[in-house]
Amino acid sequence: MIKTDILIIGAGPTGLFAVFEAGLLKLKCHLIDSLPMPGGQCAEIYPKKPIYDIPSHPEIMAGDLIKNLEDQIAPFQPGYTLGESAVTIEKTDDEQFIVTTDQGKKHQAPVVAIAGGLGNFEPRKPPLENLESYENKGVNYIIKDPEYYRNKKVVIAGGGDSALDWTIFLENVASSVTLVHRRNEFRGALDSVDKVQGLKNEGRINLITPAEVTAVEGRDKLEALRVNQEGISTKLECDYFIPLFGLTPKLGPIANWGLEIEKNAIKVDNSLDYQTNIPGIYAIGDVNTYPGKLKLILCGFHEATLMCQSAFKRIFPDRRNVFKYTTVSGVSGFDGTQKQAAKSTIKSIE
Amino acid sequence: MSADIRIYVTDREGKTHELIAPTDMQMNLMEVCKANELPVEGTCGGMALCASCQCYIESSHPLYERSDDEEAMLAEAFHAKDTSRLGCQILMTTELDGLEIVLAPEE
Image (cartoon, chains in turn orange, purple):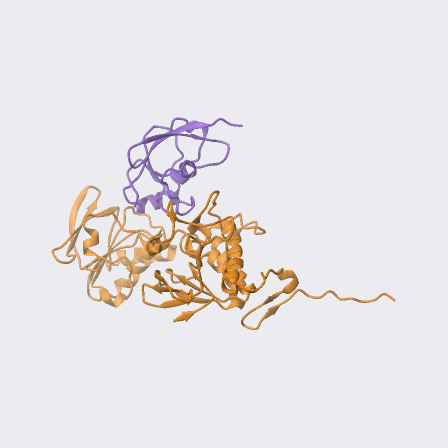
């Protein structure tokens, strides 16, 4: 069981900054995120895109913003559970919450802050009839262990980096790899596009473009696909079909936690502390809603700050509110580091 | 100040909404739909990196051609047609007065 003061669900910019504000109040944080790295949308969707409305940064790449936040919170030694989704929440008799992930990992804290953005990132599934009935029976959206495909006939669909990268990788493992994409152009690293071109030229992969998988077939498991190439439909026998069309966020299991939900977002009390209808559970950043809500990173930072003040009062009801200016008090990390403004030298004039 | 325009958006239930869109605020179609509380997600915020604002253009208004980014995203969008566009890539300009679009199904 992982124990912490504030359990933050979602390691995007808002969740990361909450660690800093909590740290100033001597509260420890642990973050859970379904992605394998911190950063949320900034890392998954647009790391190389500039953001222009972060105060005091005329321009900053989303990926750099995350890097900076990680540096900023490092002294407060946050814990991470990455690549796992928060699935259930229970409340104990002594006012603690226990959050369990899809992989069974348990986390305990007196305060839970949901900073889940638009939700868990889940694979985009192509709208093919009966596709879901073949899931894990030949249809996979995520490649967990490439060895699984050794000496199998694999068909990959998609035109981005993951489709290209896995085509290159599985060519060495599978007995055959076919890549299907709706057009001839691929959106991926040039190096990967060149490699796939090379594999195609050498006849080591089967590239079908511009084409689309239109049907999945098989009795108890996947046996073949229907592929439509410029109006001509052909049957393509295969053991595995891996559609790689990127990820899309879904609110997911959090929607079943008994929280008040409005338009796919969690309702909070914005006049006070961004608490949800369940005391002790807060929602900050893009995941919440209230009158006048704006889904902006800068608003998430503000919400995280006020949430931490309220969390402190909840954890230490008898203690006075603690509020400090970092310029005055500096930053004392849990790792023993100390940042402090340089004291001005006083020298007398004689 | 430039004039507002009217656009006609048919939602996924088949109901058509007349929206008034400003042309002096650099707003795109996705933002106009969201501002009018139509069910357009705009997940990526308007960077042509998701297809949640995909729509079909029904009228013959002069639109800018698809950029490479938009073309690439539409190539991976589901339910795409020849008339598909990403709403976030369509800037509201006076030429688009009377534009008619239909929202693509949700993925």
